[in-house]
Image (cartoon, rainbow, N blue to C red; front, side, top):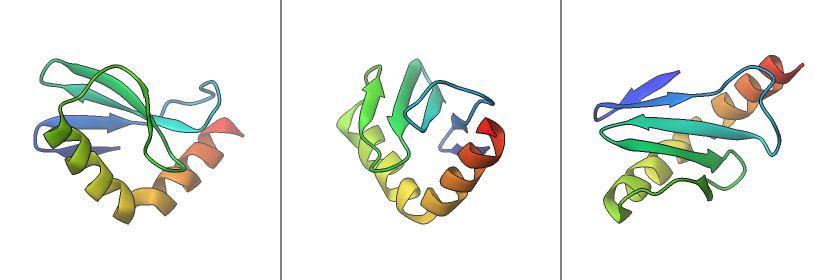
Length: 72
């Protein structure tokens, strides 16, 4: 779906609730809620979490529509 600083962001089809996205790369394997970018699973450095929160602000609508279309 997207790449940021060498990290890949994915939304998987028919994935379990709550609506979320996955972050992978550089030893990171984590997931975050689409609603508010809360960490659901995994660990990330404060720097990476800030980066993802920044990206999430501009990508929230895209994440939500992608989740909706893939979960249908």
